[in-house]
Length: 308
Image (cartoon, rainbow, N blue to C red; front, side, top):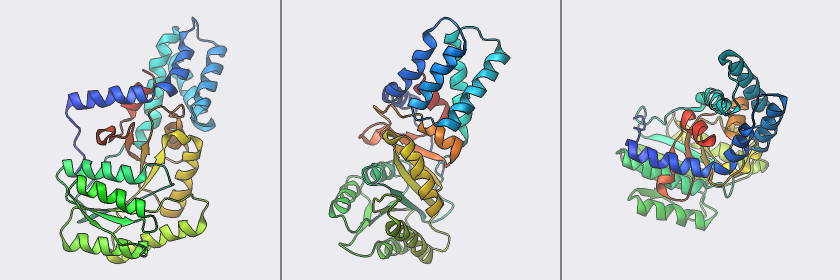
């Protein structure tokens, strides 16, 4: 199953929320185009604005070079018109990150979810559960964050809210819970098993090794699993989010990202940095706490919302 696009009015409402969420990042960039001429000063201001938005040095240089080429090719002379060309350049850079989450090639599709504490991981799993349920998928949740009672309770609330089953045990081994959940998912004919792991910093080596163990044990329950390894990152953390992507990708071989809390951040440019330096697909982005505030990622929509 490919996630079907929502109805047009719903998507329009999402775009409005996305534009509002990215306003803090976008206003510092779009303010550059209020001048009267395209010159070195404009490029310097734009470079500063992109770097301040945590676009990163490599992506910033790439965007500036692409923009200059597009301006030359189109013979643009108005600064206001440059904004549209930048949106095109940004869309081009971000397009490789566009990829739908596909369900159905395996039964169950096993999705392992990682992230640092506070990134919004468990909430994102709840929203993802709702998204999958809305598309007719039966979901089993695995509470493999066994050491934090609040995490199990929070996941339990989401399970109840979405009327899905959950495999959980107090203070048990996270890998064992994951194994049991995948085995249960197969036995019960579930479409998806979502495994919530304990939040951790990539610098905590023993905890990263525990994540690798969970992944290995999941493979023992199903030789082809996990089919997806997702990392939830907080859009507010900018370049730190890029460092997390690199560290977790090195440890787990990530297949996708969920980027949360893009509302109100001045660091929304980090997606460009990820596209330039570690292009792991972005399956979903979030701009708020509500269930409907998690949506599939579109490069064009993001670029337009950022530079609205």
